[in-house]
Image: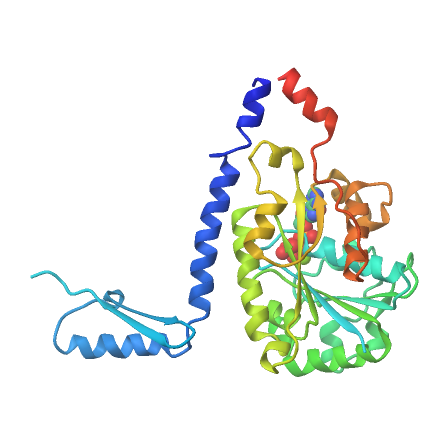
Length: 84
Length: 269
Ligand SMILES: Nc1ncnc2c1ncn2[C@@H]1O[C@H](COP(=O)(O)OP(=O)(O)OP(=O)(O)O)[C@@H](O)[C@H]1O
Ligand SMILES: [Mg+2]
């Protein structure tokens, strides 16, 4: 390894910079999950049960998330229906 | 009133017991009456690191279950004045650490000690939760490696929601990052997360950076908390961390690859 390669290798695309990027993404995601209210899993289950009365869906086809802003919160509901 | 400091991590094998031994020894050496408690029921190890394994008669669970008094179970350190060890039980179930039992023991210790250091077991199960529940401060022991950093972040979430301070709406648990097994050489080569990287992600104050060092294993072989190896880099780094825990400002050391190694690598390789 030459003198200049040594310094270049410290910049981008090192395995450490990949590690940092992956960590930033997963940690941000997990922190978001943590702040979700306790009732969300139950709400999701009940929504699945209701929708199942009409359409056949899997548990993971209903996604519920709460987005908290300063003035109001938005309950985001995503239902993926099977193709016909 | 003692200050309760929990050494925790989520991930196993990152250096919690090594750190508990050195921090408690360091605090006692600075003149504070200190007790270090092994919460790793079933996998007792602190006694070996503190070189008192043959002096264990009663343990933490014996005290909780009323089979021994605290005075019977506490082991006085032979090297450092005002340092005591409360060993974990080797044989019982983790559930033997009941909430009320742990609280009672901590309250009793709190009357006479300045610091109570809790060595948490790995994981986020009962034993780890008991070790962090009563904490006033947490030393989040982390290795510069993806799974350790992620687990540390989970532990921070638990400290912020499930600790006594969180549940009772008191001032939050003080959180400190202790980065251990740090290898500046590998960081400079881009193979290891740097102290800045980990600090950026976890976003809590940095208490110390302990270099990866052969001395740590040597010290544990002999039952010597590595902070007592005054000449070693790891020992000095732990001493700095203890001083910072008490609010002293110390410059960070051992963050750069040593010059000789650096030049040898560039021109020799
Ligand atoms: N700075 C260091 N340099 C080199 N080796 C280290 C360092 N810190 C800890 N170790 C080694 O790592 C191993 C695990 O350390 P330790 O037992 O303190 O971890 P732990 O987090 O308590 O583990 P567990 O989760 O099983 O309780 C030991 O062999 C120890 O000697
Ligand atoms: Mg341990």
